[in-house]
Length: 309
Image (cartoon, rainbow, N blue to C red; front, side, top):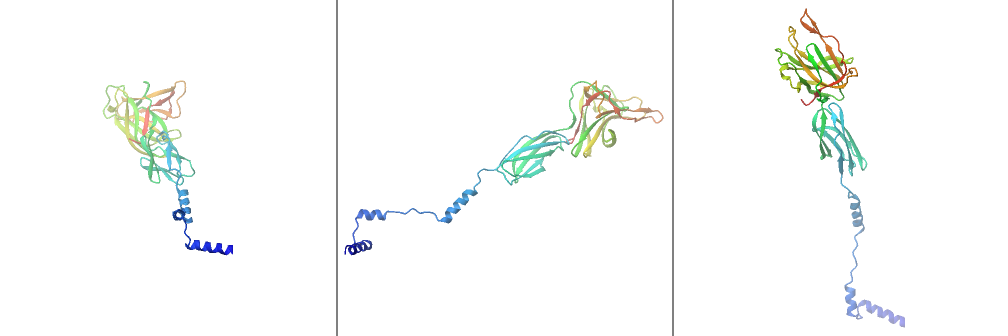
């Protein structure tokens, strides 16, 4: 009987027939159940979080390594957070190298062919966006020290020559020489001539390009004199020959002097510097070439080979 009464009371309570104190009713009405995102929403949030990059691509480069015309410089750097980025290097707007970044961080190394002396502009971009820019200094071929007063004579009968090597193809626009004259006056129509010549068995060979200037452009005060030329040079050894050209019938010889720095007067002349002493042919009234020989001792002539004109 007690069990039956209990069941009836419970049914009445559920159906609302039994009054429940107001405070309890209000409490139950104000209860809220926290809302949880559905499973797909949670998964999406996790996926988005994992796709967010932990860092942005960055690049650091050292200054481009200086070089000599026709030689090779270099550019080195480090790429961080840049996997699969395409890095391209330009010199004066011309592409010279490209690499796809792999790893993090990744070391980047590029060779820079020195085809133009002077100040060059090196730029680097990543997927088309510039990330680095710097000046790159390239020196002309030759020897530019002008300390001292030692000099050698150059004339129609005394030729001098100095060798230089080309590692990468270049277009030569000028040959320079540090010259002076010891004469207060010169003959008419005398010219100072420079030849770029190929190598022939360790001596100057055939003429590749030549240029001349009136001897009057050389003064008694030593100065750099630039001879304009236009020569396409591939890899190899070449010579600059310095000589004077004048009317064949003239017995007197104009001359200029090229400055040099002594290396060692106790050592014989090296294989990079040569001279030729011409002989007079009275029948033809010309100066005939002889053979190239070494200088008396080692020295460096002040000269340049430039691609910048």
